[in-house]
Length: 132
Image (tube, rainbow, N blue to C red; front, side):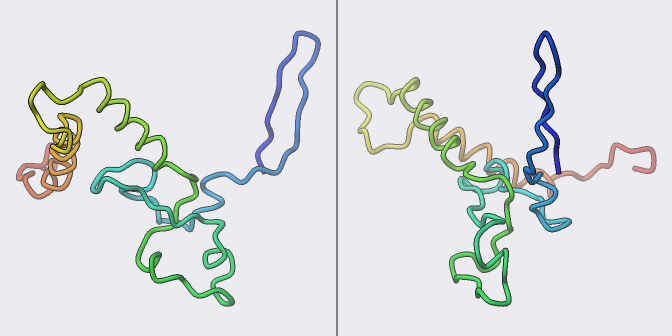
């Protein structure tokens, strides 16, 4: 249980509202890429911890679309990312003469970022720790 404190000039009011923390909702060790922000793909997990197949797996089989997808305790993280990309595309419109269906600079930059994230671990040849 997490306690939330609301401070006023006269007093501190404690609300003992039982709000599950991310750690309480996620099975140990399940946090990784594409859980809270797109890192290796352009989408995050939508396999929420409170879905029936995660809450009561013995009585609710996992739907095929969630097979092998990590459980996320964070709620809808895809919508803010999609909004970010929409705003980026508006701010950096395609140059004059480029067809609107062509990929925007934002999409190209995102593809490059994701490709770098996927290639970076295998391209690291030197350890920078003391034991190297």
